[in-house]
Each structure stands twice: as structure tokens, then as C-alpha cells.
Length: 343
Image (cartoon, rainbow, N blue to C red; front, side, top):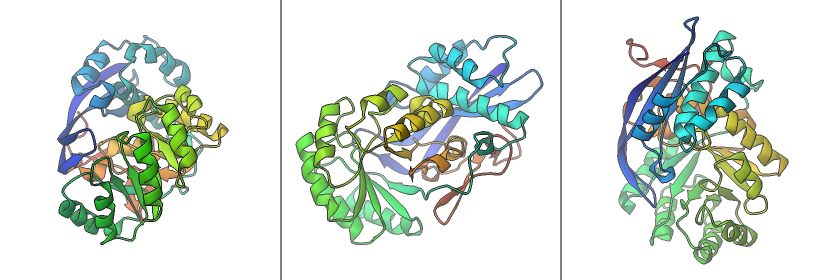
């Protein structure tokens, strides 16, 4: 198999801020894997600095990757487990390879990826639309502009969190999910969540530091709202460790290493009676559409990263009444926006 890596620079519509960082552009990677029959599979690497990754580190890891000669792509489980050690610490790069191989195999079988997983593409939840941190007047404007979406996700983690919610509530009565991105102390989280309950908040994502499992447990025990772990939930093993600490987990392909690992996390979480959110980083429609194929298995979708970029180079999943309409094409089902194809 031949692996090709291309830059995928995504310019954002507005500066996107969360509690720990801000960006105007994201440098992702487009990965293409071609087999001896000429079949192609596509994947996207969306590295995050928070997890010690960058476009450069992902590219370097991918350039070193050795796919054994004569590999049968249909044996995906063995193939991916064999490649995973080569991409240790580079979850976004692993996710791109995982996506590309799933895309390739599903295309060879002439099946949309969700059908390859035996899932019903009509059973998808509504997705939220994220409002990043900004001056209050800008967040108010974004909330007004997002009136066509069914659910808002609001970033918190500042000394004006209550003002943010009051401001958004002044112009929107939509359900709101909040994400503190691990920025609150345990005591502040308990106080904030008690207040948020009366503001019609649906759930709270990652209130405290990712390694503070006891803190998560204390917050969850005191919380009148569902608590969802994001940064704390990277692997299936993490999901086991989170039992009793949270009500649910947020899975991201670029965080966990792709569709195969995401599926394992879903099954482990269900066995522990946890709810499941499927989220994303800022990605093109390639990464978002790949994740969307798993949405029939989950409770909450937060797949809006492609909506935050200025000129999405890829056409894939579409929104209808706030729901992600999965393409009925083989594989992931994406197409280039221009006629030039994928490089």
C-alpha cells in the first residue's frame, strides 16, 4: 500500500477560543492510502497541541510508518493493531490512517461506512453548534446567528462564565450544553453547576482537570446535571477508569486514534451504562463525515467543526433540521469541492 500525505490548512470564520487556547487557522493533514488494485482511502489528521501533537509531528510519524507488504486491508483489526505501536503518541495520525483504511475497504465492498458497520443512517441525533469564548457582544451575536441550530454548546472557563450564560440566554432559549475544558476547580464546578441547572443547561463537559478522577467523582456526585468526560477519555482503558466518576464520555476520532478505537470505547461505555457523545476538533468535512457514520450508536452529537471553517475543501455530511445526513456513497462518502480531486 502507498501512503500520501498532503497539507490541509483550514482558515476559521472567526477566532476560536476555549479556556486554554485560541486559533484563527488549523493545520491538519490529508492522508490517502492506495492499494495495489488502485483503490483509494482518505483520512484526516487533526492534531491538538493539548495532546502534544502538531501537523509536523503527525507528518513525521506518518512518513516513518511501514505498512507490511502483502497486507490484506480486509483484515482491519489485525492491520490496525499492528500499525498502532508505530504511531504511539500521535492519535491524530493514527486516526487518519484508520479512517483511510476503513474508507478503502468500504469502497471495495461498495458499502457506505455506516452500512459496513451494520448501522442505520437514519438513526442519528441532532448535533450542537459551538460558540467559542469571545467578548460578550460577540458571543451574543453568534448565539443570534445560530438560531437555526437545535442545540448550542457554549465554551466556559473564565471569570465571567455566568455573564456569558446570561448574555446568551437573553437572545436564545435553545438547549445549551457547556464545556469548561478542564478549567474549574472542584469547588467552583459544584457551585457553577448548581447555578447552571436553573439556566436550562442540558449537560456539563469536562469541568475539572483531566487527571483528577476523584475530583470528577465528587463533582458528579454533587451535580444535578449530567457530567461528560472529554479530555479524561482518550482510550478504552480510560473509560473503564472513569466508571462512577462521570455520567458519560465524549469520543473524538483524532483523540482516540480512529473509528476502530471509537467503536471499542462506545461498547465499553455502554457496558458501564454511560451515555456517549461523539465530538470533534476543527476538521474538514472528511473528519466530520467519518465520525458521523458512528452517530447511530450515540446519545449526543457535537460534530460541527466543519461549520467553523471558512472554505471547506471537502463535501460530505449535510445538515437537515440539525441532523447529520450521512452520504449514501461507498466508504466515508466525501468528494472534493473543486474538480481537481484529492491530491
